[in-house]
Image (tube, rainbow, N blue to C red; front, side, top):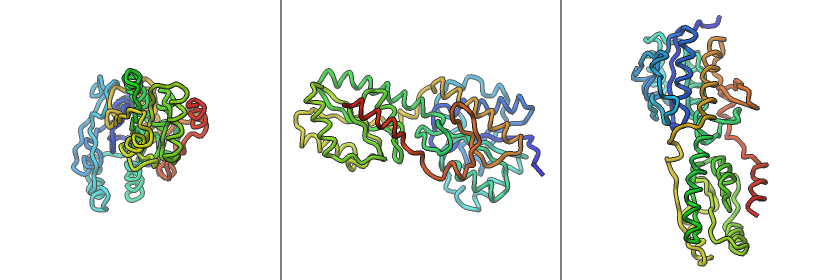
Length: 328
């Protein structure tokens, strides 16, 4: 028999991403629309263990749709990785009479939710919130669009100074395991070369590319480097290698770091988060559990969490081909 859902909790977990607040707002207001109680859990799974809960209503989420980060905070929680920690979390949910929860996060957050569901048969639903866009089953994750627009805006500014001083800039962006940010932002910003974890282009090809750029008359160049790229040990080693073998270049490094996570979410991310929030609550009321809300071809879909965390998404080969043509 399907468990009746009267009270739903919502929380954010793992790394923050722009649009998480929009998703929180959507879950809370959908609960209000459906005449359900809604509870916010602060500090992710750590807050669940500690019982850091707060009742929410439609007015509780005023003026957060445009804010970056997460008003519910986020935290890593080693204790939740243990059976004892998860039991504490379950007891807190039962004590608060919470019937289901919606977790907004990435692979690690979803893995915790899946395990929790298996151990306690507790209804869970996931909303993908990560700037890396690396979750199987969805074309976009919340925060990815904002992140690549942030990167493009910064690269446009860096190009101004690169052109003024005839410099080569290595710009490192996030992407330890996947190169979606680097590839999309690199194409969008017109980078001369894009280095991603999925392709080890080698130092010689990088030199050849830079030589061609110089020979074609380019006085400055931008090379986008995903942090997980394997061409060199790190972006600073790449700088030293180019300086040694191509002394004609005045080389600089810019590591964008956590600025990629910040800022107001784009309209795309706000709309996506709003749609996913509604779908997550509706799915729980339909008796669904252990799913992630995804989007494919503009349509929302439910993807088993086990499938969503089974691997990282593949890089877009067609976009790589476009990149190769554009950098000619």
